[in-house]
Image 1 (cartoon, rainbow, N blue to C red):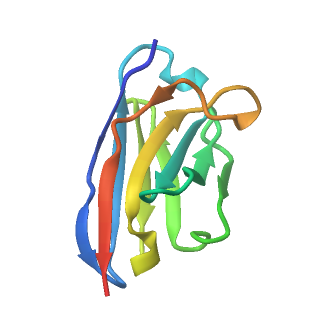
Image 2 (image 1 turned 60 degrees about the horizontal axis):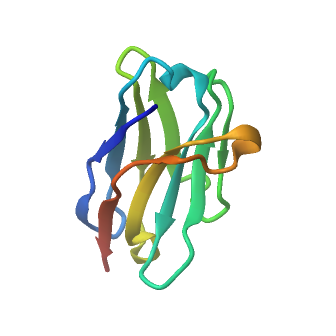
Amino acid sequence: QVQLVESGGGLVQAGGSLRLSCAASGRTFSRYAMGWFRQAPGKEREFVARIRFSGGSTYYADSVKGRFTISRDYAKNTVYLQMNRLKPEDTDVYYCNALGYDYVPGDYWGQGNKVTVSS
């Protein structure tokens, strides 16, 4: 079993930066590809970024490509989402996830972390 605890959200002005962290418990962290998703009230949860279990390959939603960077630190059992040049439309609750087969969202989610970007 994997437990995911997020931190790092908050309020920032448009054009600013934030870094989200997702700390995983358990020894199996390195076996999972990890992903970030976001969700606005009343909307479907949408994919943001993912990183392979090996850490060597990343993939991003078009809406964040070139602005967000996902990375992972195996020594700290943590995955990060560095968010630069933030826009008001990036305002959402962000969730990390331990991805399943073929990068489908798995059963393990972080608690959610609110990011608010003011214009």
